Length: 271
Image (cartoon, rainbow, N blue to C red):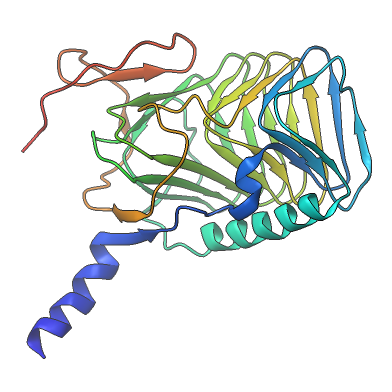
């Protein structure tokens, strides 16, 4: 009985069950819109393209889809339903740190759930440290808008295998020009990618509004650690720590940056 009580206390504090299919069938989509998907310029999607319940997909070509296009069909309908389920799951996670009012630029964050009561912004570089562990999640719960400044970026250090990043956005997301972004953006309203903004190891999903593209690359693969298909696992949320000033010593850890695509190097594990 004593052992049972200990387990009940420890598990909620130190672990979060990670479902491989947070997004279900929507996992196959690079872009999934609700009312419409609009593209300008030679955007490239490495994954499926879809819209539901709307019927408008424009700008392909010149945009290129390395996948299947689903315009108001059963596949897109199911993907939207699964994306909503995933959105609600992410929104329901218990936060490990509150970042309301802080800019993400200059921070280094470990696996955990980061909460913004209202809007979230990124100016400059955000570093996500997976600490060399596998099957980890970093989740951002954003009450209203997500906005990145031009040339902002998300860098990944110490990746393991099957690590995931999710951005659950309460209204709309806007990525500024030439932003190098990482992870899955699931917005309740709309998503806009300005000229040259790219998304790696992620998807762009609008649950109720439109997705607007302009000369973007969106790749559901190209993940740090080299994996594209998550496996079930237990995500340790131990020592999520605080947001600390970004700083890096290349002799101590591996680095994987979106903009430079620098190969990962092994680091000495901290004991």
